[in-house]
Length: 136
Length: 66
Image (cartoon, each protein chain N blue to C red):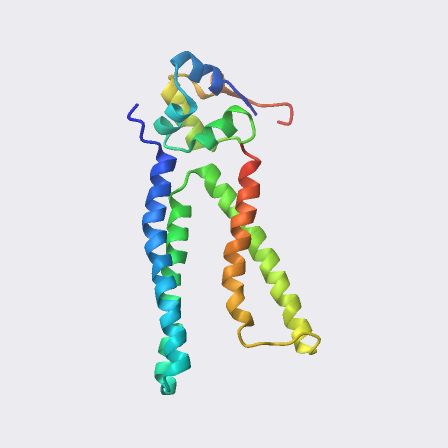
């Protein structure tokens, strides 16, 4: 055989798409924060600058989705289970927090929503790792 | 479901990685099929049968839960 491991090739392709997008996010985020803190921007520009980090993060999500779709059937099964468990946990947790914030038992800081996506990605990674171990 | 994939692979002298490359799946998937942790889809089972040049029912047989 040629020694071209399909799994390794997929991983490389994923990293080629994921890493530039993540580097873009790491580069854009501080610029956005500095501009918002130091420059008195009109509301329209404030919206644009505040949403700037979303663009590279959308490419991160795109890289993850494309990677999932390129994988073989067992890997896709693991992905599906990981995504389903992550959505259930994060969905129920944010639903519960929303109820508690609604009755003012918990504070409602404006940055709370910012943590949903990083928590989803982190939890998904952990769940995926644990599920994959079952098939080793 | 029980299968003869490991034995057939051994007869060919292929590693799990070799078989994975021929089937265009990950090595983990080949290992999961061989150890019975994962039952392949019908298209993948047919691909395995075609690769080994055998009828599908001579490679895969229902387990005790079927």
